[in-house]
Length: 317
Image (cartoon, rainbow, N blue to C red):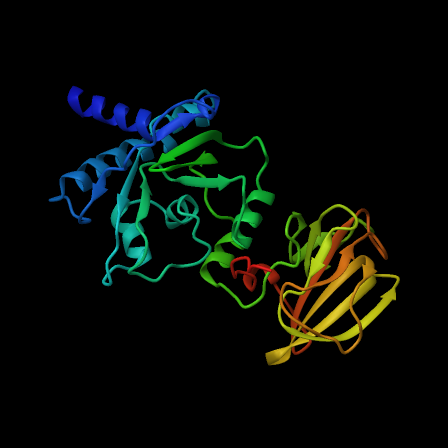
């Protein structure tokens, strides 16, 4: 890269990314350089491709002495407006940037169908985490990452500033990937939570032995509102020594959802409920080590991984 090109890259970085310490500054949001076509005959795409090569080299040659903030200083953004012929994964492949980087930067909760809104394209692979999580996918990403992971930054766009954390080289976890690729017809039953135990084999916190875990454990303060994950009919409200106070809702297609360890049940048997309606509150009843919601999904009686079935963006209530 010649000297002039280095200057241009540095100017892009200054214009479009401001360190956390400058969040309250007077910077004027800039306009992202626009890519017209995803081929190297396009001057901006050639520039972007060169930036991507440098960014990938920075990430994959990083050592313990090279922290996320140092790598993130090289990050630049470009814009691209897909047309009807574009495919999301083809765009990612052509740009040599993992699709999870493009998805999290643009706050996509599922695979987009084009034509659509203009995409931002990052020059460095990684995960962007917005603290004001909106979609269920963003909530899952936020809950599964250490609060100190990555580097804080502000993305300056025309008329707005978006605050987020950037983890260079980061990627979707298996649950996050399944969530993005397979948007389902269920939604998370909590607005805010921390995922403390996933679906599958685990060491039981009660017995200390390896055993199957047929749902997700979502930690939240006692009394937090619990919502129906999908339209359905309440077929069971009860309490036992394992689930404590719990609710079971039947849905179309042989599906049922279970909400366990509740502190209170705020719905009635045979009640018709809509997705997003409050049905109870988080507690620690039954076999529990602390306040959380145990959430299960079953089809025809067989437990399914909720992480592969939840995926619809948060609906307004």
